[in-house]
Image 1 (spheres, rainbow, N blue to C red):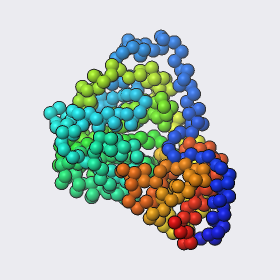
Image 2: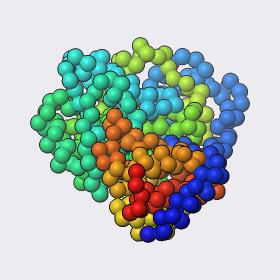
Image 3: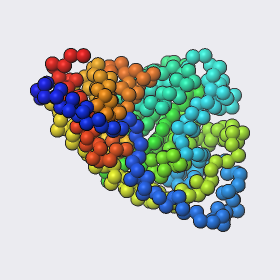
Image 4: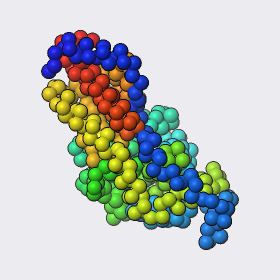
Length: 414
């Protein structure tokens, strides 16, 4: 361990530089957004908005989305086009609406609405995605922490919980390159999800496949198709699958997809048709022109990987060099996605995040990756390397590693 006084002096020296660095969220860098500049100009006349079917994308209609985009997402998610609804720019919006529909109408015709079922709960693998947890908190849904294992959430815990407690109505999952652990669920974990036997007939798995094509290295990690596995045991109605192009094209102007069983799709459309007369089909058409097939998407994601991969490598190299001998500190080494999960000794995360902020680096709030913003061990920090430039990231890493070594030093006193 480095000399304590030297670490303290270095921290004060960095503070004096008055840095202004932001690694608080997993945002695409401007360089990534620049790679899809053509989407802003690839429709040049109204004639291009009229499809061969006669559908005019400038007009109402097409509540479930354009056929070209349904075909594209069917390839990405490995589902049938009839198992898809294409919507606006945010999959988070669809997830919120899906919970809201269940609260108001129930998950199928004749089901008791969740809002009239008394206290209900969701299982939440942790650390996880803070916005998932915020949806539950908004609707007053109790959240239950589920620990992670090396290949995904603790399935023994999940199977026991859902089979014995009818108040458990759902679980949040980011199955590929999980936010923030970077874990991709193993085939065994996916099959066990598909075969769940919940006590609640209206239990649903919210399968947020946000990073389905977000590989950093050639080949990437493979995720088993949960809907196909569920069909083998008659459980297809249990799964709600979400994805979007928010980190493929433009983060604020992408398109999103909801996939599920045909029965669930029909139920959702029976409510959505009163919510909208149609999505932004012009934007869907822009995407269809930019990405005519899944190979075009893969080409796009390789461009992104060339921008993002050096940033992930910089983080991992810095951690290996600076933190390997710091007792109680460990981190994930993801092959894709947008995050690295950094873990400190118990009780150190809030302090480290606060000291980093004081010196000019904004990180995700300690505890954000847990329900109610409470990390029971106060140890996890979500690292988001994508948004800063590489020079900015290197400055941030120098500060972060200094802070961690300082707060973990045996001579440090809170």
